[in-house]
Length: 356
Image (cartoon, rainbow, N blue to C red; front, side, top):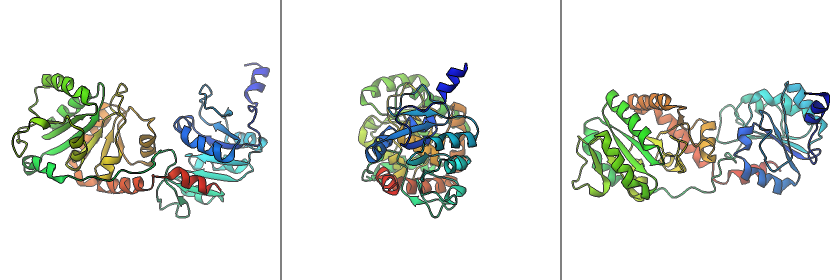
């Protein structure tokens, strides 16, 4: 890189000086479009400081990619004379950078105790944190939850699994699966029942896919009962797969499962949005695979540690085995997840209010 290129790379885009600057990592900004628009509507002149690359991403706002030592980044921000600095989801390593900006600092989605002691204009958290008792509990503005649906509970359907419960069998719910996910689900289930016997609840999200997925599942040679065709009061103990083809039991069955593997997270080809809200409302531990992590609510739940996440099939299976071995150990996680979820509706509006 020549001197002219180096000079140009350090120049701020037009409109960035004197603006409200949001500083965050690139992957955070990529899922923050709705919140950024709200900030732009509130403050007018908005720009972005991107910490870990992302120079090729078009955010729709003046943006500057920042790298190097903390003090160097702080000096560059100070030269821009921002009206305010909005720190989005960063950890305590960036405190000195924020302090060096020389303007009011608002820290959104804080997690570390030191952030609460740094004297910033406002600090918000996505849910109550013992280490940040003075922070405003606003919810995560990136979760994009406007309101929670009313919880519908039909525990009567769970009576169908009486024989499995009496036989000390676990119930794992692969809920709302999408394209190319059922094959992964069957592989995980086959491994799990070799470890300890249980039963799979399987519900593809799209009704159009239900019949072809069922036909494809026959090659696994597992005793399967279809929800529509169950002719007895109870699912027989020899059943391995309870196959669901209707939307209503798809939701009702969350109450019956020991754990939920969220469809839309197991394969990148899946077009379904993972449902985290319903199993959280029912107090069920949620396991997600490596896909779909740009979805706002899932990304927010991952950041807050409210779901168990596996980056590949081996890691997903390890979580399944943990859930099978110690079903009571997840009760603390599910309680935290329920509380976390309760703070998310309307979070963006509360954060905007905290920004003044």
